[in-house]
Length: 359
Picture 1: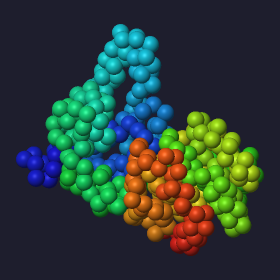
Picture 2: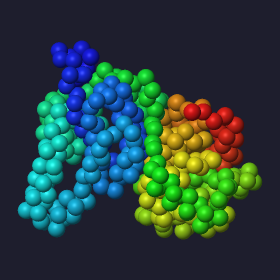
Picture 3: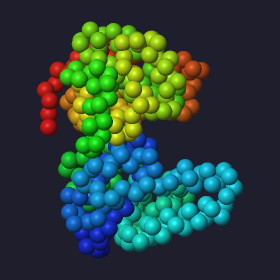
């Protein structure tokens, strides 16, 4: 598949399946692959396979012809219920659906067994995996090891695109909100009394406590943001409602829209925000994809220090124990985030807001 391959890839990529099923942030980071493929193969049919429920994130991308939803939850539930015959029937039906599309190439950007299996189910003759592991390398016809400078956002996907010989000259996360989601976002703003007002999206929630900033820190930051005549708006998914109820006790000035938006509606709210502040979570990364002034707070995970955007900054203290990822050693102190002061975040906010808008 590389430029050095014996067969010119331009003669081979006619129908391409991109497999990056989750998570929100990782799909955002991988999003430039679609436009790189489109620039390189303008006549190709480009499809993207994601978990059901995440389709809205990329459905409006003009470089993507088709978004295919993988019913992972249905498969998982059948397995839990020991409905193995039903599971087998569902897998076979999904395989038939994929193979009917006659993909010639599948690009597995996730590199796990589940994504490798989906690539194999597609029937694509050429299956290219990014850093394939968990046995998925056995399902690939080629594996490209992960690479690229870890400081740069989307670096491993850029490395993958370059290894394939794609046109990767402009390779930064990019998202598109649909008119329907934009209209619903406007309705939510109107209901919340935010018509015509500047607002800042706060994205405080993730699935891991070692990635969370502290409620009292959000409270201190809220006071400073409100003083700048910017209204905080808290976003998150349905699973974050309990955390949001606790958080807004500390920040009563914030508008709580947690659990009230679909993924596409949240994207549309972020697209028109004056500012985005959040931890290492998908909604925060969406701020960069929409070129909004963004401040991202990292602790237990290694950040992309190079955002590729003049109006976005990352705050990461770089403590010796960081990144610990899923194995904290601080016994719940989470010093890597506790020591990020609201004043430090507000200083970054003022810097990113001072950057002129760019296309």
